[in-house]
Image (cartoon, rainbow, N blue to C red):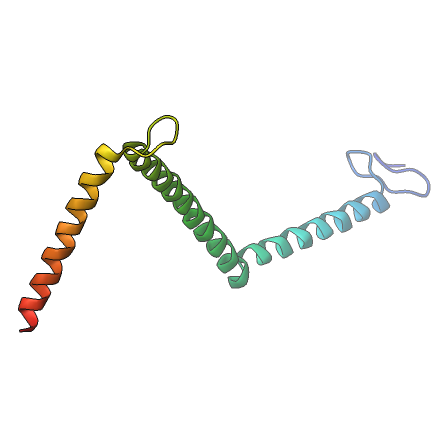
Length: 117
């Protein structure tokens, strides 16, 4: 008998039988088919579009979250200007702000009135 062979079963140099080699080839084919299917799914336009949409939505949500935090901080800082530590209004700051705001409104209204006439 030659090297790597027995009476009924042929073996390769690594000692594998023909059936083992064929089974290994079948397994490798299946793995390759699965890999190709996965790659096809990854590059499919629908998948790519969904990924882009998800990333864009996440970026927008993150930015909106930051804007909300900044706006909340600004509101709290503004509120602190007109309310003391106990939550009581500060008339010494509210009255001048209302007067300035009212004056601005009167100026805008009079400018519009002059523009129409």
